[in-house]
Image 1 (cartoon, rainbow, N blue to C red):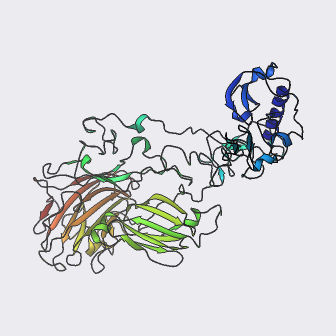
Image 2: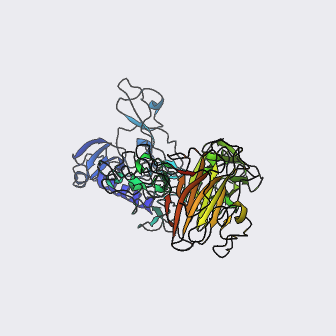
Amino acid sequence: MKKLFFILICFSVVFILSCGGGSGSSGDACESNLDCKVGYVCSGGSCVSESSSEDGSGDGDSSELPDDNNGSEDGKSDNDGNSSTDDSDDWVSPDDPSSNGTCEPGKKQKCGYQGPEGTEDVGPCKAAVRTCKEDGTWGKCEGAVEPVLENTNELCTNGIDDDCDGIVDNGIDNICQGGSVIPDEEEPDEEDDSDVEHCDTSCSTLIEIDNNGCLAPIVSEGEAGLCNGQDDDCDGKIDEGCPCTPGATQSCFSGKPANRGIGTCHDGIQTCKSSPMRAAKGDWGESKCIDEILPTKDVCDKADNNCNGCVDEGLCCLPPIDCSFDIGTATPFVDKLIDGTKIYDVEHQFNDAETATWEWTLVKGPCDVVLGKTSFSLKSAVSGVTGTSTDSAKSITFSGTGLSQFKVNFQLSGTYNLHLKVTRANGEVYECDWPLKVVSTGLRVELCWDSNTKVDVDLHVGKNGTTTTWGSNDCYFSNCRDGSSPKWYSATANGNNPRLDIDNRGDGPIPENINIDNPGDGHAFRVGAYYHPSLSMDNVETHAVVNIYCGGTRKATYGYDPLPQLSGFNKKKDFWKVAEIEWIGGYDSDACNIYPKFDDSGNYVIDRPRDATYSNW
């Protein structure tokens, strides 16, 4: 219908022009009405006002009416191969003898259209034109416009019929702005009785915050009362001037505040550091935000990569990969399977999942870095191929042809960033990033240390009001692994409560952990680490690390990084008094208060030898 309407308009204009012309020229050369400004029509190769052509004062040639013989005279053809309605004598037919020889200066001639059949003179598409020069020879063919496509579809949201099919801003699959489409207000096309749809050029959720939400520079976010885990004044520091307890952690985002929590953007984690000048006091602004996902360029993947509230904005496409896919969460000691065929080529555009190269990369957790060995295992669900570390300090990568599925089994809690890269045989690359959270309900305390081949360190957790002696009625390797004692709470589906899941003794280097699945509201616990005398070499200093998780969220890290680093932990029977924990809420809570143990100089407290009295804290 749109094409028919356009043709009728063109013939109407020509009929009007045949009755007379006007002198109201804009001075612009033209081939058709599409080349003229609003209020002007093409006549005699020039744009003239519609009013001048209507009043009979135009200078068009009334001797030539729009019929099938016109094309042989002016050399301009419409979509059907017939002549156009331009009556200008300035045009030379392609069949004219002068086409291959000398020509009359100023004459014009249309060059052969190179675009797909049926697209010439539709939308902006047109053939190139050459002009005869002063020396009587033809100039170059210039000004051709052919259909423009993006990922086999029309460019979206620019208000132009780029693919020259007679419909403005339509995609083959109509996936635009997160799948939003608008029914066309015109009548259905005569060749297709379905409603025409085109891309939504608006985005109601688009974030429009001046300066990306950044505040004017301030002295410090602490003084301004803006301690919220983000860089409010965009000066490169998060919560500078905001006090914290060394070892405490918080969610953070170093990107522009307006992007936080939008689209693919995801918080990282920040650990409070101290300095010798501040003793046991810290400043969030001294700590980096790690493992966050920041904005990237928006690509065709069903995800809001630039984190501005719009999915695949400006792109009409059928995404080959779905980065909005929900990978869910994982549970310690349970295989987590991720099926890549539900992420890549779901619509079967390529059908090359088995020939493409799949690369899965997982960041390492804090204990993985300390141990120098990953506490999780990656393997293919198909071939059983294990992962290969590409960065011994930060990540481990598992890759291979056709490895669209893989399993990961975690021993520890926390959030691990997952990166997927799919490379097709032709070199095309598609990538996604997700945070993969490993969740264990209740309280979880984890211990790891370097020098683990020479030193054995044991994790101890006691319950205030119940434990009276360290190494007796607290929870540690001797009595908590088999569940004989203590029994502070009823057993859960996961096992005894509390319990020690893994122990370094004889199995190292691996971490140790103690779990309490359903701690009581207001109940308090103490954490310690013991330099075991019989299995350790004396005077070998080791740097132990304790991570504390409440409801699957890491709330604190003590001992290795950040400052102060645990030092002086080097003799048999040394006992590090780490922290006291107060649980808040029910078993499914993630709220707790943590109070690390520091001496008057801001250093960690190590008893020599271990004081067996639990109350001596």
